[in-house]
Length: 484
Image (cartoon, rainbow, N blue to C red):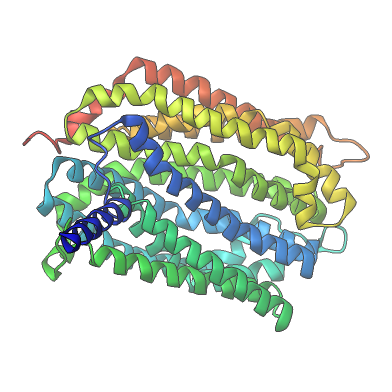
């Protein structure tokens, strides 16, 4: 009898572990619990991802200097541009995966996963070659400082970019496979792998930069090694999920109709990311005109900004998976309930982070640089952006719901309008109107007021399009759950 109790206890423990680390079915149980259970590890994962990027900036700023910090910051828009296509395919794959998972269509789920892996391999190779060729020309086109007046950061920025491109395949596979895992409700293991990669990155950063004195090159090498490890771990996790999907060579054969479906759903998101990245390149050119110090300030502010954005992107992604699975299962009542739940949780979390930024802004900036001018400018810029994060939270949650229903076009259009038509022109307009003897290129505040205006505009547009309800019509047009 005692042995039977022990066996039953072990079985219950194994079931709890399986439910924690396995794919999460979000079509049953409390919507609130499902969203929170899925979002918490995702939030921690986003924190780890941001920490991953932030540690680079801290080590560079404190050990090499503001010039190297500016070089890394000037490179980021180009890296994001080259990642845009993967973000699109990942979004399309994640939506299809979540809906096939919700519909319990194992064969179609397996085919989707196999096709996505093969597509990732092909596109990552092409992107790597392209990146190596265009990196320096784009840096020059962006007017990256390389003179005595604004600073010499072009060569360091190019070195960082070239090394990152050599390890691009690791980043591509991690982002793609972790998106697939989250589509099946598994947000735990991508988090674990990211934490592992983060730890590796920190150790290697310290070793390469402090011990070996490799400078910017050391930071880049540490990054690609850590990303490669996280990608391998994600692939191993995916290939061991035999209780959910089937793995075999036949599933890696590209199927035209499936590829078209993935691209059709994911391309708008990819274009949206590309639009963001292209706009970022244009804004980076404006940033470069202000010189090395402002580039360093912007690099630091964007690192802190990443932490403030965490709940926005986290709950947006959680809503996409939740809505995708429940639409796949035909449970519209749960979809409707999730709107209020997502907004309440997201805004509450975001408000706490905004309060922390307002209270400890100077301390946060001081972690990256000891230069008083950088600290003062950085804190002022954070105060400009602070309440815009709450507005952006609403936008991301509503867009997440629309994407989960398969409507990726509307979020793309809203993003294009706010980023290209509003943010970029407003930034240059404010800069032009504020030119002075002290600021020949205009006030650096133009970078941040324009961002705040674009966020608020995006929220207004998202609410309008969400209330109109056209996104609901997209769900049935995908045709994934019709056979149920």
